[in-house]
Image 1 (cartoon, rainbow over the protein chains, first blue to last red):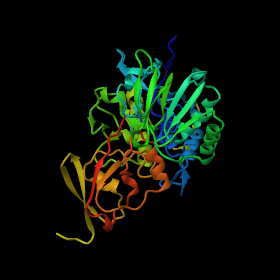
Image 2 (cartoon, chains in turn blue, purple):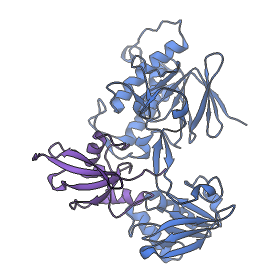
Image 3 (cartoon, rainbow over the protein chains, first blue to last red):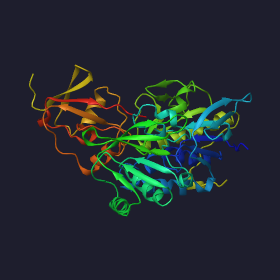
Image 4 (cartoon, helix red, strand yellow):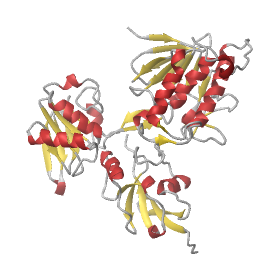
Length: 338
Length: 110
């Protein structure tokens, strides 16, 4: 059955700006539902640099990106936001009463009165290697860019490609489960977490994993399903290996994605907004943080926070055009609960 | 024109088509920042921390650069394509020794 959620504001993107928008909306007693394509909150702060310090958050001389996200989650907790994670918003429809319906990649329906796009640089999608006919085997036919359910690979023959930590981690994890695991890495050494590299070497020595270094997967073969891959090594030496699955793990890269086709006014892959309330060309849809553009735009988290506050005011007026809002200070009134 | 604080690097935009880009050596800029400022479409998602790989370039000719750090190599080796001249432009600080460098932007595979 299709999941359905109903809320005041649907926030697309669970990065710092999307999360803080929950707070600003909450002060106005607007409920929020947050959607993100990544399986965890925090956007690029969690995905790319959780351990890096940030120095330009007001009031924090320095704070680790991961800690900023933890703090934001604590800050918005009183407003009980709801989340749909690991799903990408695909399309939107404006309903007759002026509200919106959003549908995610997994078919979740979100009904809302306003939309705040806080999508950063877009949704994170796996990087795909340049191999001819790779797409032919996508969608369950043998090529996978991420491991969703490890058990799916039980007793199967796998080739994993990549030299990063996720390639190492999944090699270790799947070594016990799969029938055969071959790890192909273009380098001669692994520069990721030393413990993981060490573990993979042990598995190789014990004959549980085959390690192919200085090599790349260059061809995929099969009719309906993937049947084999060709690995090219030094001096163009080629080896064809019969496998059931090929898992290239080359990290994630952000793409603007479907939002680019919603008919909103864009400029250089960013959504144009009016700085009065960060509204887009479509009434009721707002864009805040790195995804928007306006004269003088600075891609800073602190600017995104400011944009979130003004967006919430705008969304309030959009949802309740007849109500008068009086700004209340949290220091005087405390944080309202919902 | 000679200016002590400027070097010229050449971006190969297509085979045998090179554009000259002037890069100041006294502003502490990275090559990524210079390329971005010159209008090249580089995302630089991580802002220059060698963590996203979106500023990937290939050095084609010119003076030898300082060796890449371990962090830079880790990211380069994690990318789907890499060549012997691969570098992350965010990790290359513009200096007076790089005059005449020839490079191209690596395609962002997706």
